[in-house]
Image (cartoon, rainbow, N blue to C red):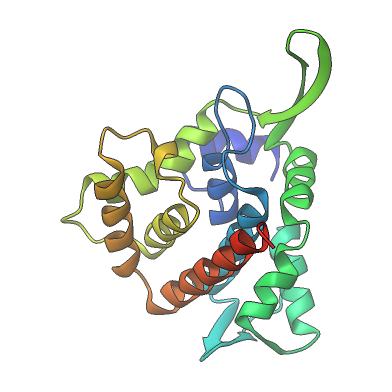
Length: 225
């Protein structure tokens, strides 16, 4: 993504990929720190990448298998890497593929977003003493843009969200990130609205989200083993 592309996106309200939207939502605007359990966030980001590919028609779901549909590159290194890896084997079971894709994904995606200028490195001091470098959005509008589709879906429950917005709602719910939407709606009601929005989306996308939820449960339990 070029600087010109970023400016047009911020000005027009055009959407980021789901993985980028989820990345922004999963960080505190003030501190720049993740507000989600990192192993779970890795899985959620992997699910977002698969959903981006699925909704773009680059892969399809055949029961519990991901099957390549369009292996052509699209100038998005993250998506292209996932497609190339899948194309090398033609198809893969969804859950193991998500586990593979999730391995170290948060760090690699952070590096990619820094390299493409979506994030910028900011030098700060921890406790006012220790110097640290944090990745922050290159434009303060990016997190607001990222939250917009999910906020709209939740605040307009009578309207069916588009497939990408429904999928984003599902991922936010699975990762317990509802508070990051900054809505004055009680937590249980907000989670209920997010779930309903997700269920009104694409059935294949909902299958991906359900698989992500199961894997998030696995990594959460693994912490206590």
